[in-house]
Image 1 (cartoon, rainbow, N blue to C red):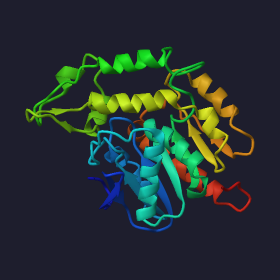
Image 2 (cartoon, helix red, strand yellow):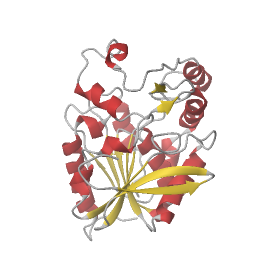
Image 3 (cartoon, rainbow, N blue to C red):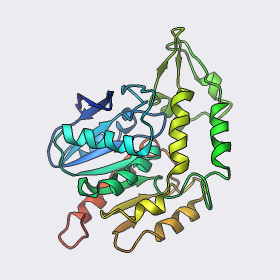
Amino acid sequence: MKGEIIMKRVAVYHAQTKLQVWEGERKGESLLFLHPQGSRSSIWNEMLPHFTDKYHPVCMDLRGHGESDFADKGYDIETVCRDILAVLDQLQIPKAHLIGNSLGGDFAVFFAAFHPERTASLCLLDAGMINYIGPNGERDLTREEVLAEFAQRPIKAFEPGEDIVPDNIHRWVPWEGYFAKWFQHTSRYPLPDGRIAYQIPTRINLQIMETVCDLCYEEAHRHIRCPILFLPAETEPMLSVKLQMIERVPAKVSTKTVVLADSRHLMPLDQPIATAREIRTFLAEIAQPSSATC
């Protein structure tokens, strides 16, 4: 992973799948960064330098993403959480603060619910707040309709090094830095004809979406014991619903909510410095003796 700090490569194997991990110098408590769907660990590059002075930053490419194996199976929430556990075990990390954006944050919530003894805190960047479908869900569709939609999505192929802007500019007008940066950090999927795709293969994406449709965050929140920092994006849809869901987190869990002005969904790209600042402030607050701990 290219960035402003040196991260050594570590290969972790779980369920016959290689998970690519990037580990920084151990200077303090461990922070595990989990990227969004379709992305890879490089999305954290602008944030990582803000945690090198007193923390131990670790990033992992989720299975089916980045430089991890594009496994044929294992995208259910139980297996993904065991992937995360395998990373912590191999790196001999007894407990980590999990920092996740979008899908990475969704998975972090369930890891904290399944393995509270290994989770020091959660920092959820526009993630882990509202269910994808169902009452007050992100999408007003049934599970079957969601899967049919993703099954029919065409996978576009590009030549290596081909300019992708002309093909995508009609989707995002004006074409700006936010969207251009996203394509710098998407996973690349090689195709049999030598071209590449920037979209997750349908065989993998359908399994991920099956899992996403079944996730219930209110249920997961009931099993979490660690402090949580919620960072809902101000400009994304359903902010009020997200805030209402946060209010329903059980009182036994210490929570903090920060809404960054004009923030968008992909916070590591949109406002990396401000996001890192809020996470550091939160970590300092929960480190105080009077703060709630897991």
